Image (cartoon, rainbow over all chains, first blue to last red; front, side):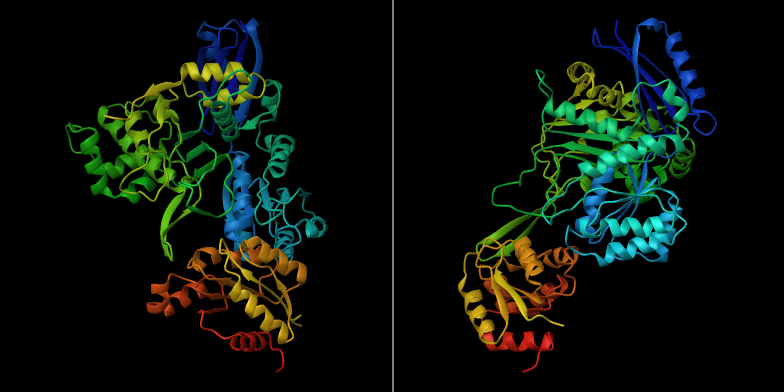
Length: 473
Length: 141
């Protein structure tokens, strides 16, 4: 046996998954409440003991322990750029792709109000961008002076116009800020370069942020570095799609990850226009992309979804999902409010499962619509011209659902159907006929943790355990 | 101080060079320093040429009816590239012919909303453009 423990310090639960790399099987799992406020190792220890108590694991065969974390709010980044569609968008992409949560994003000259918002957001890193190399200098210099004059204590990562990068650093350091310079996220108008920024973010996460978040004590238990959980899921997405030497991947894919507070969409897909005559606008799309909707989640943000949809719509959906109803009048609003305070709640009745499914399908539909690109028509001398903005996912081959609801909920197919192309919204470029899978083990983060070291085995385990589901009929 | 440097060309996938060519002749005649980029010029190339030549204005010609699509986002690129105050003019058959006839005020509004300072139909004379540039740049005569 070659047992690997895959640990995730989540915002609510610390989860441990044990896999055997030799037989390529999942051996067991356990979880305990995350104890980041006191001592993170208490919850970890508790989960670990529960795992061993399961009896399927011989402690002597444990050869490695790898971990991800989204505890203590995850990795929070404030993005500052110049033009919203250019450097600010590039900065957001860099942060999201590094597994961060973008807690605020501002373009153009920032003022005291914006600085106050950045401070209130309690971010771990400020990502300061603006100007192409040799382009605008004034705005990033102004923004650096505003940040320098603030009470911000977190590191500021400068990834803007190379020509003034050192000047920006000097302005920040003169006021005692910790500033790091890396290469521009948008060195030219037509090229987004996120890798150097992401390498720096990773470096900062390891060197300072895990410490600040109370994760340092866990490091003694873990081999290698702790990565942000969304980064682990992104690594799993890329491995699953592209494969590795000697082991083919499943091709282009979309992962819908529904959480209590957020909904994440990860996609891996080559970027092609919806047809050769279509004009593509906006920054070039990356092959691997992640977006996060901070207002869509089925626990903490359940009331947000409910008020977005309205009671009448919700009742109609519930009628369709579970026609039998609950057998008694249900105060939907009160139920949804209760969900937002009891974030670990697991549904007890078919009707409560239906409520979860309704919230999840709506979160999926909205999050996918924001992630996918759009198509519109314009008229020209030669007739209609189609203009595409953003990502074309029409031909994506696979759709994967992950998150607690796909583990315990009976409505996986219904939720995933909301991620597909719909004739009612033909302008939204969502997948038309993907093969669907459910991450019934809720182990994609773990696949990502193995992706660097044991890609082939990780990929085979993922393929073995992802459960295919049929969306038609 | 304006430099009197102008960048001009035909934008997008449009190969019709003649409008911009006639205009650049007139601009040179009026004393401007002109960088003529020819036809089928992407937005980025206009921006790069304007940075290199420290230009006061970018003039884009579009004759094939897709001017609005091709001009979208040019102002934003200029801002990012440090050219936030540069003048932007567009001219030619900047929209579909029927639209040009019936909806000119609407088209003008769309170009203004995209951050263009002036937009002209294909009936404009070089003298009008020269006069507008001199006035916008506060150059004498």
